Image (cartoon, rainbow, N blue to C red; front, side):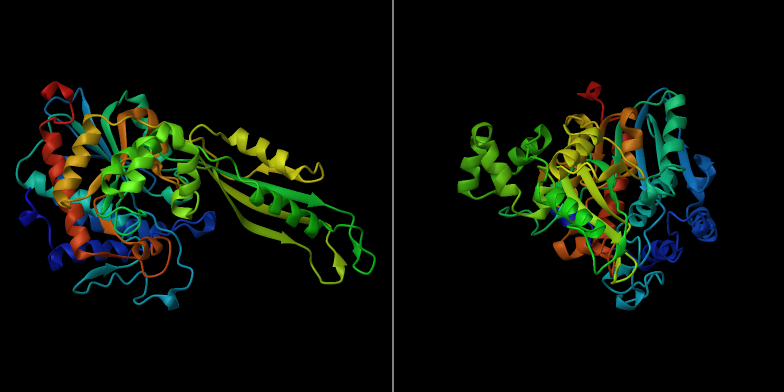
Length: 458
């Protein structure tokens, strides 16, 4: 593809198919009584109506509301790719702050608006657009392709991705490529880089939430002891936050910086040229910004604190939740041990709550990575392509052992302001970005149809 043939827009019919999916309020909550069954059924009907060839020619297996499609290849003994996306979205905090209501699926001349426009319905619908077009052209892949669309990624995927991945595992599936959300092309986000950066993530950080809990006798506030339960829990939270886990330059982040070196100013190029010696200095520089600190440290985020019932009553209990995103090389057990060490108070009870996961395996760049990189450069000419780690949690972690190479990436160009809309206010995707996403998937499927992720074709 030349720069002159890069995508410029999508027509109204294509934009409307995405908008219709955004009108299905497939909200995931941890409250089982809040299941959005009707919305998921509406979305399923929309998919089957909008993509008739996909639903006529691919095999479909349901896992609750999750959808696993199998597209048999002409040599079906091998699997070229597992393409992931998720149907569910997070709740909206305050719909009154949105330019357009979050579930109205408004289409204007520039954007398609709505919760899920970036995370992650645009990827889901773009994949189906590409497969439908390929089927219309009579294209059939050389090796089998799976499409796995979970319904509960936002609440950790236990009923969707976990079950689909286990089904594939039992079937003995081993793919060349696992492709999911997580990396994008950022503009003006990477400090000191003079061009858009395409971050093709090769793994993701782990996840753990630690509950800190204190119990005291209580009593009247006119006769307090030296420390109340609230004071004690606040002190413990302060110690955890003030003593973060150590900075560390992992191999994947060293590779990321090495790939970006050519796009950086001369002073930084020189520093990265001696990265083996200047590692501590590099990590300190990266730790100066939250966006880059997350790449060189297990992050610590106190998120909830509670305790007490009345201003003149000594609290009998207090607790706090602290969320950690765990760097490869650290562990869930290591996070707990670190908390005990820095709190230094046996009266503060510690326990894991909710879901926790270890950092994923980080795959090395290979033919599948090079394919994704080449397509990114075609879709957005002039980008700096690099590797990285997804700081959040995705469904990919459940499929970790099912592919030789894992890539988390979509070729949409986002600014810092655009990134803030994900899980935030005014989530939207530009028509240009949506065109890029469809074209990327169309070209990916063409490449996969010829088995081009395999080194054997060289």
